[in-house]
Each structure stands twice: as structure tokens, then as C-alpha cells.
Length: 151
Image 1 (cartoon, rainbow, N blue to C red):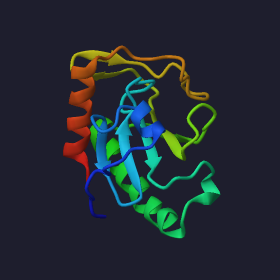
Image 2 (image 1 turned 45 degrees about the horizontal axis):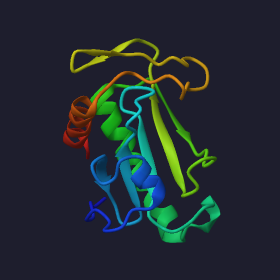
Image 3 (image 1 turned 120 degrees about the vertical axis):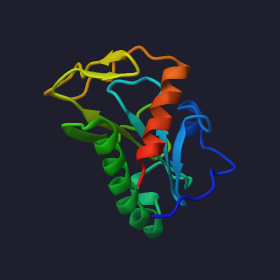
Image 4 (image 1 turned 135 degrees about the vertical axis):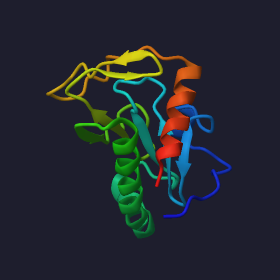
């Protein structure tokens, strides 16, 4: 799967989650961003580029590319953090553009860059209200680590 140039325009959802600074990998129809509020270590946002506010509004080409993008996400997160489960949440209650919250899930405490990360919802639904304390520098380290693990 080829990486494409970062889109020149970002929808409101991508901007809310820090684009372009938080983009880990960009594809033709999708971008993978680090979720600034790390509910779990390596929490991501998978955002569609097309102007769509419902999943079914995406083009067939976007759906086709989604297969490879999710494969890349799971390979990178596996290599980077060895998650136990993964959750894709398409909530779109506040941010209307098509996007998923991608949450690697962990049965045990994880450590990265000297910080401890917990999965407060394990083994049930993820707890998006819980945020592991990071700052811009730690988030940048997570981005770079994931980029180094990207297939």
C-alpha cells in the first residue's frame, strides 16, 4: 500500500485531532492520525478524506483502500506496542466527518518513554473519558515510533 502526500485540505474532524502535525500516514482516501488524548497507548484516529458524514456515502474506492489501511494499522500497532485486542469505534456524535477511533487494548499496564499507560476499560468497552497523561513531546515520540513500525 503506497503512502500518498498529506492532503492539502483537512476536514474539521482531522483538524480537531491535530492535522497535519498528528498525521502518522496518509493514503489516497484515508489518513491515520495519533489521537492526542491517549485513552490507550497508540490510540489513533482513522479519518476519511472524502466529504462524507455517513459511512455509506464513501466511494467504493475508499472502501477498497480501507482494507489495506486497516492491515497496515494493525501491523504497525502490533510491532510497536503488542496490543491484546483492537477496537474500531465509529461514533461520529460530535465530529460529523467519517472517522474511526482506533484503540489498541491492553490487559496489562504498558510503559513507553518512561511513562505508564493503562487501559481503564479493560476487559470491557474502552473508557474514552480516561486519558493517559502525555504532552506534545511524548505524542511526537509515539508518532515517530509508529512511523518506524509502519509496513
